[in-house]
Structure formats: structure tokens, C-alpha cells
Amino acid sequence: MATAADVPVKNPTDFSNAEVSKTLDGPTPRSLGTLDQGAFWVNLGVSLLGFTGAATVMMPAGAPPLSFVAALAATVVGTVIGSVMLGLSAVPGAQTQAPSMVLLRGLFGAKLSYLPTLLNVVQLIGWGTFEILAITQGAQAIFGGGPRWPWVIAVGLLTTAMTIWPLGAVRLLRRYVTIAVAIALVYLFVQVLRQPIPNVNAGSWRGFWYGTDAALAVAVSFIPLASDYSRHAKSTKAAFSTAAVGYSLSQIACYALGLLVLLQAGTLDEPYRPFLAVPLGALFLGVIVLREVDQSFADTYSTGVSLQNLLPRTDRRVLTGAIGVLTTVMALTLNMDQYAGFLTLIGSVFVPMFGVLAADYFGRNRHRDPAASWDLSETAPSRWRMLIAWVAGLAVYQLIHPGDAGFWSKGWTNLASALHFTPADWMSASLFSFIVAAVLAYLLGLLPRRS
Figure (cartoon, rainbow, N blue to C red):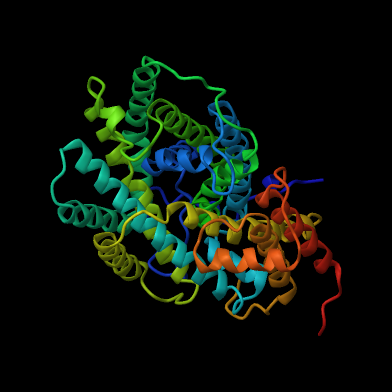
């Protein structure tokens, strides 16, 4: 039986160095090779926010702090699971040449796809703002402070410019950035390991699955944009493997470095100070800070592409330009205090949604070409059953791990109390919600459709 990765891509024309069409009606160039995609996902896995994210793994909300060993294990497990999900989510884009939110027309129907599209736009704007702030904080640390606004505006302008030539930006990462980032990471690892290492077993394993969910949430946050880039892949297998393997390896390395710093310092209130304290630390940290722009670029570009699901004949450059201005303005006025709660909310939305997509795209269509069987038109009929499965998975996630997202989390905590439900320590919100959403979607998909 043929697997999803064996299904040939449609219209595998290279178009050499052609750029993305301005609207959804134009041709889709297949110009990203394995190295291009691999460099893209490796770079996305290395993030300044990863150092802060390491704290959400080691000190998860609702559980005692993990030991270094437990936190590293949670990072590996969560990242690998999330990266496999990420790789699989890249497959439909490579097979259909459709961006991520347009693919959801086949899953939920055209009109119902507007709901996850709007949620994705909100989360990508949030991520884009966080990335601009992270780059600004890194630059301020390297240059000894100074006003924030010049850095925010400069990063916002560079981010927006990259979205005008997105495929060119991806190829630029492969040619010049990835090797420099690898050298910087290795150097910083060596310097951090030269410092005294406290007891790596001091701490608890009780919150292991909470930490796993935190690491997994970061990986799956890229699921709603994976097909925005894999639709330009020359091969479906490469689209899967580069996302699953490349992203997994780099996020584990980034989080491991953050965990080491957290173990030594006991806090990440000033996450860049340990790197700046070592010889040439400012130089190598500067490489990672500059590379971080690819994160803000990906968020901004995919926000524009997502909006094209609602406005298919609108020029993507106009959309990304407007989003670039918005995230820049938000970065001038906001801070990163709600980062952990934001991660939890993202995971609760997109983990079960991927469960529904996996069950329907790879399960229900396993005996035929799934790319041909999905209706991706603007008139695709609504599929309420898939929406029900998604909401059910989201509810399971929140009941197990409501996180710390203000009134939203408090509401789910109150509901769990009313149901007399107390989650056990071994319950993973991500895995349980994925399984519930996938099984329910598959079963509902077996029911005959009404005329």
C-alpha cells in the first residue's frame, strides 16, 4: 500500500528562482530543494525564545521544578513528538501545492476554515511580536542597553522586507546563515560547559509531562504554517524529513543550552548575561540574534498567506506589509510576561487540530490520493463533524492542563472542578487531546454524509 509520502507532487515544475505569486491564483514554484528546506527548519528550531522556553520546561506551571535530567528528557520527548507532527503537517502542502489555511477548506469546509484561520492569524501576530521583542532585547544586551524603539523599528523593517521575497529569503538562510549559527551554538555550548555544573538530579520528575507539553507546544506552533513553505518543495519526502529531523535536532540543542544556563544561574531573568560573560560571547550571540529575524519573517509572511484564505485575490505584499507595521507597533508597547500562558493556549488549539487533520487526510483517504480527494475550492461544503472532533480535543487538553492564560484558564479550572476531574501527573494534555481528536474525527468520518 502506498504511503502519503509516496504520492507524487502535482506540477513539479522548478521555476528556478521564481518567487511566490502575488495571489493564490498564480502558479506555485517548486524551487526549494532539500538543503533549502533543511536550513529553514534548522534555523527556526534555534530561537532566542528557546532560552526562555527552557524555563517553561524546567519550571512548568502547576508542578514542582524538574531536575536537569528530567527537563532534558521532557525536551527530547516533547520536541521529537512535536517535530514528527510538524513533518507530517508539511506533507499535504507538498502534495497539493496549497498553503496551510487553504488546506483547512478540505478539512472543515471553506466557511468553517475561517475560524482556525483567524486563530492562526492571532497566534502568528503574537509570535511575530514576541520575536521582534526577543531580537531587540538581545541587541540591547550586546550593545549595553539604550532605547528600545530604534531596534524595534529596524527589525520590523527588515522582517517586512524579507516577506516581499520569501523564497529568496529561505535560500539566503541556506547559503550564509545556517553554518554560522551552528558554529555559534557549538562555541557557546563549549564555553557554558567549562563552567561548574551543579547537581543535575536535584529536582523532581513529577511535572515531566507538563514540561513535555511545553516543549511540544513550541514545535506544533509551526504546524499552521508548515505547508506555506512545503508547497514549494521539490519532493514530498524531503518536505517531511527536513521539518521532522531538522527542526527536532536544532530545538533540542537550543533548549539544552538554555537548560544548562538555567541550571548554573538558577534564573533566566537575564538570559544573555552568561553568554556575554565568555570570550567572544557578544560576537557569537550576535549571530544568533541576527538569525532570529527568520522567525519574525516566517510569522509575518505566513500571517499574510493565512489572510489570503479569506482574501484570495489580495496581493500578499500588501498583507505582509500591513502585518509588519502592526507587529512593530505592538512590539513598541508590549512585553513578554505572558509567554508561558501563550504557549499553553497555542498547544491546546493546534495539537487537536492536527489530530483531526491526520485522521482525515492520512486515515480516511489512505486508499486513494488524498490530494485529489480534498475539496480546496472557495465553495467547499462545511464539515461540522470535523469541527466537533477538534473542539472535543481542545476541551480534553484544557481540562488536563489549563495553563496560565488568565480568564480562559480559570474557566477551564472551574469546569474541571464542577466535573470533579483531577488530572493525574502522568497525563499528557498534548497526547490525550491528539488521540481523542484523531479517533473521534476518524469515527465521525465513517458516518455517511447527508445530501
